[in-house]
Image (cartoon, rainbow over all chains, first blue to last red; front, side, top):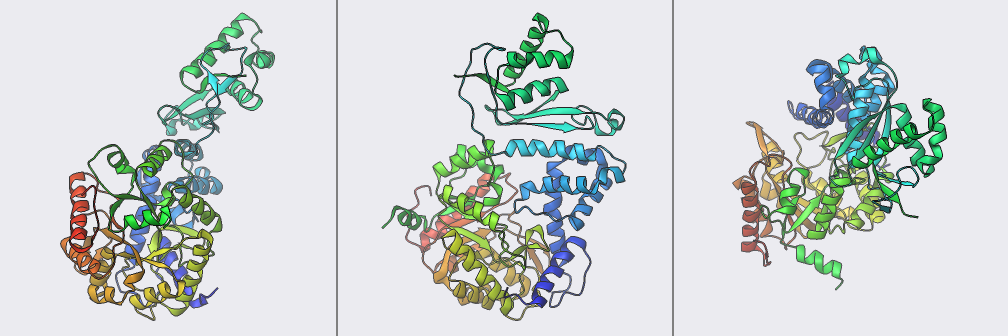
Length: 251
Length: 287
């Protein structure tokens, strides 16, 4: 490297000042000017996080939110050159530091993750869509799923209730997040564990629902028969209406 | 002459605008704004699918594209981010970028991105460092890099003048120059030098691209380069004086926010085109 240690140190000092506000006698600077850099860097980070996490921001209030942002700003080390990915780094920083437990807001990780996933799914690279027919047998044919979806697991139902109300509701919650093929908008669905099982099986095994009916019956305790068929048809039909399932795979 | 070179030549003297998400609808689906070309900040579009990807694809199908990077961090003490540069190369190729430019600054310090342009100390060893990195990037991307003179609010541990710093880097890295006329105005005001004298020292034959923008005066002795306000007349004057001394290149209107008044933004595009028409021999289909 051509850069002398002294120049590198000065540059690092400058960067550190921008993050911490602690001046360490930078040489050759115009008095009263460098604080503008800290202000501008801070504003970029703050604006990016405020717009990515409107629910978290509102849930924590200005003062607590500011502490979370400042902590990340000073100690976090964002690796992504892409500003739009900064919110994920913010989530990961606080998840790794277990900040939620420390500040007695155990739902912090889930709330940040939930909000980040909306951005993630909205922006996710386009995935290849299957070729499908609009008509077929709901239980007997292989189903064509919208490939632009993610399933996340939460401990607190922050997707259904105000975050502050969720500490007493700790459990296991699954949320289906998907991008509409028509509008590109992101939609969320709370899914009971059994529905997640069905959906995951369809995603992973590419088989008709009839072939996993036995396991569904065992897991749910619902006797395999007409009632179970009706329940499954309703579930599949609902997912088709919402464009999570697009249609029936062509042979 | 190759088709690529022809297209590049035909962009000279044309006026473009940065494709910001807030005004993409107006640019692509209406005639409220009539740029000749569009500029992407690659970092805002790389690896993105869905609606924004469709927007980008539509933009590419409708306009010639230039790309202006934000995060290469050419002046940083850290290693170059080669994973990012590899993705960048794919992006530039996919979008048939006619020009790729970056800032003569650093954005990464101690393993953390700061997402803003920090001033490199104007020092000999920093010149060596940046020259080496520009050469590496140009070699890998297999295209020239146009480096932008950035606005700065304080020098840091300088051992040479800004003009000496910029000129030596452009010369030794054998790269192009993106001349940001507003930045020259801002720096001249903030640091008390003569903007025209500064521009006269630059290798104007290496200028491949010009940026124009608005700024905000925040103190009697300080202007911040905001890209949020209309261009002021003294910057237009400096632009006209500058282009009278050089051959035609593409000119970009930079605006990052405050998009409420699109008529005023369109008026800025037209004003730039009119100044160009008076000084350069180019044709404007949309002027």
